[in-house]
Image: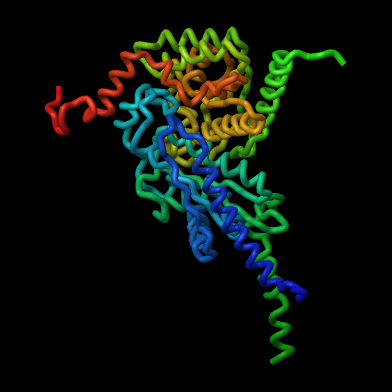
Length: 225
Length: 216
C-alpha cells in the first residue's frame, strides 16, 4: 500500500466513476415525473469510446444536411471529449397522442394530429413531426432530473439535441422513438462543455496536437533518419 | 425577540420557498441559452377562480373537474401556485422538424390556432425549456420539503382565465404545506358515477361473468 498509485489506476478509477455516474443519472431521469404517470421515456447509455465516436461522426455528417445545423460540428467536437452519452427518448409522442386536446401542436384535437401527415424522411429533417408536444415534454422532466443529479454529483454535463437526432438516424434507439435528446457527461478536471471556442471543431485539443505533430514530425524524421 | 406563531412562520416560509422556486426555474438549463419564460405566483383568490373554472368543465373534462374539486380543498391550508409560460414561436432557428414544419420560419408564419388550453402550433424546444423550468421549480420544492405537483390542467385553466399576460403555452407547479400530502392520491375527488364508469371500462373482465362476454 505504500507504493505510489499509477496514472493508469487513476484513469481506470475515473472511468469507473463515469460508469457509476451514468447509471445514477439514468435512475434519476427514469424516476422523474411523467405526464399522467404513464411510462414514456427510455434512457440508453453509450460509454464505449468507439460507439461514442460513431455517434460523433454521424453528428458531423448531419452538419451539412441543413444550413441551420452548422453548430453540429462544434457539438461533435464537444461530444468527442465526453466520457459517456445518455440518450433520452420519447416513445409515445409520435404514435400515441395524449388525448388532452391541448392545442400545443396547433391541432385543436388529437384526432386532427393523428390525421396530419408526418414530415418525409429526408436528410434535412431531424424529427418527423408533428409530434404530440404534451407527450414529448416528458423528456424535459427526464433531462432536468439528470441535470439536477449531475449538479449534485459534480459531474460535468452538456445537453445536445444534435446527438439525439443522430442516434435516431443511426436507429440505435427504440423503433417507436419520435423525439430524442442526449446528455453527455465528463469526469475531467476541465469541463469539455464549458468555455468552448466558437470554432471548437477546428481548434480543439486533438487538432492542436495534430498541428504540433505535423510541424515537428518532418524535423524529427530528417534528424533521426 | 417576540414569539412568532407557527402559522405565521409557515406562511412566511412558503412565501420564501416560492421565491426560491422562481429562482430555480429562472436559472434552469435551457436550449438556446436564452431565458424567455414568464413566471407568476398566484394567490388564494386566483386559485379559487381556477378551481371554479375547472369544475365548470365537468361535462367536457372529468379530469379538470376532479382537479377543480381538489383545488377547492387544497386552498384551505397554506399553498401556492406558480404559473410558468412562454411564447409559442421559435427564436431558436433549429429547423428540427418536431413541430411538423420544416423550418422555424414556416412555424412562425403558420396560422395561429386558439383554444382554451394553449395557442398553437408551438415550438417543441420552447416547450422543453418551459417544462425544464417547471421541473427545476418542483425539484427546489422537493429539496425544501414542500408537497408539490406539476399540473397541466390548472395551467390550462389559468391560461383560459388570462391569469398571465403575454404567453401562449403554460404549465403550473402547485406546492402545499398541508399536514397530509394532498397530491398523488386523489381518488376522493372523483365522483362515484365517474369512478364506476371508468372501472367498468378499464377492467371489463372484473364486471363481466367470464372473459370474452358479448359487448354491450
